[in-house]
Length: 421
Image (cartoon, rainbow, N blue to C red; front, side, top):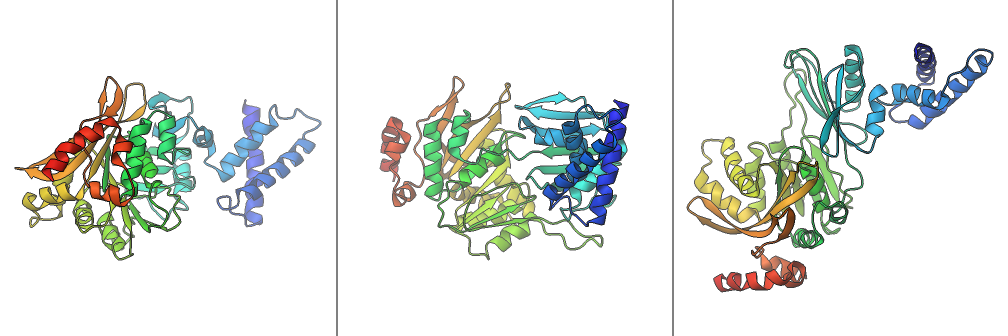
């Protein structure tokens, strides 16, 4: 084992030297590095023909390539499609999540390796990590999200989280295929997005909110111009007319910061047909509500334990914008700005599923926003509720037949809605 490690170190050193001499960039030109690794390994095998050759040249080649052009010992975990997230509590404790469940790996790193890996991950992001900025959020080249905290905010070691970008789940049909929601609910959500309803996606951590938002965005008509704003790029929208923006940290002098609230305001100047906010956490919720209330369709995600709690939180966050913002303004604005709430949860078996879909009628009783149950979970399955969707005129304008889309319950639920209208 020690001999194999020494061989890897020798070949890695030769490859790094040739990369430096030939002025190659391993990040932008990994294929050139791969050819270089094969070239150096072939030369090494020729030189060692008389002695004992490496037991597994292919594994040796992969280890050297990962060390030079990838993220070293973490690369096999990043390449493993079953791994959803990787986190490091200390160099000797590296965890992964598979199918929603965490497990401790047998990977043991040194503190120097962790620091070097973090530095390499941040190299192309334009973000920094130091005593004045002990937290960092960044996106890796493959779309995975990186979060790092350093001592003395942590007790002793760097805390590293890598949330991988899940490929192959970019549409509602693909979420139906893995059981996240039934086909009837998917058809309804697709029609709702096409009709321009404002959708709030809620759930706890790791519930699949970003994946659901990404899938909902795939139903946006291709003719629309979409502007997305996020703390860190996570959404991957296959749309022909799309502009993506992310926040920026302050520089060393403490200036130059661009918060999410600023991006929401700037997005409104870019002629959007639809505004997508990756996640609302603070006072930027006020600017989003004002945009939605002015007639601009949009979607966003929010941390909450239920769909109704998500609406309550949407009524609370704008109050952080200043003392001049009151609940008397915010509550009716939320009621008329949010049309649907899609709530997701991670169950005990590690499956991510939609738990409920609420419609927001636009009416307020006291300080309580009136909602209608469109889909709800019964006996472990998402089933059609008794409610009728808001904004029926938008569905009609988009050519959507709600009776056909929602099934037999829609006709019965529509009667009281029509009488109230």
